[in-house]
Length: 181
Ligand SMILES: CC(C)(COP(=O)(O)OP(=O)(O)OC[C@H]1O[C@@H](n2cnc3c(N)ncnc32)[C@H](O)[C@@H]1OP(=O)(O)O)[C@@H](O)C(=O)NCCC(=O)NCCS
Image 1 (spheres, rainbow, N blue to C red):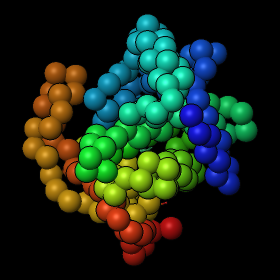
Image 2: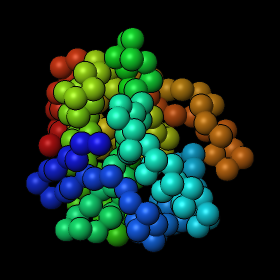
Image 3: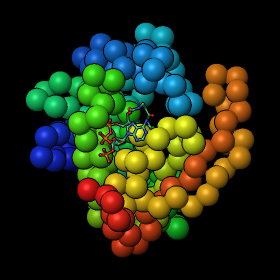
């Protein structure tokens, strides 16, 4: 898989040795407050690592997941999946360890993945969803140029509770909007 680099980040394949770093965030209930997975058991974090390591060995995977690293330390993950090759459509997501929130790192990683989705995967429409209460994630999506398109009612099951999602997308040449940086 192709590595991505930004000013502060290196996005690389996961390796089995990343288990501890992954579990540090994926097992954190605060990190998983709005996610439809977790908080992980150690076995679930190991299964995640196994899955993404296997996928990174595939030549043209439908889904790519990077380890987000800062100065060699794994601080989170970012992914993009092709949901329809025919319609050039995909979906992306991200997560960061709590100790690294608020430094613009998610925005930096997500912008690089969106660029990869457009330039390398030739996707014309890249979507992301997040819970209405997840204001930090909404801000990240707006900063990378996505627009809010709607509310998906009763979209996901989160720890036994049905929750709505907001749908965001970047289409064609959408660029970061007013107030974005
Ligand atoms: C969402 C998440 C990735 C954001 O990571 P981050 O590195 O802190 O994001 P950034 O620093 O790039 O940007 C966050 C923006 O949200 C803003 N923000 C943070 N908390 C906020 C809140 N409660 N209300 C409004 N805005 C908020 C920040 O001020 C910043 O905007 P600014 O640059 O205009 O000041 C991180 O909180 C996370 O991993 N959360 C858990 C997993 C998750 O929810 N993933 C997304 C699933 S859709």
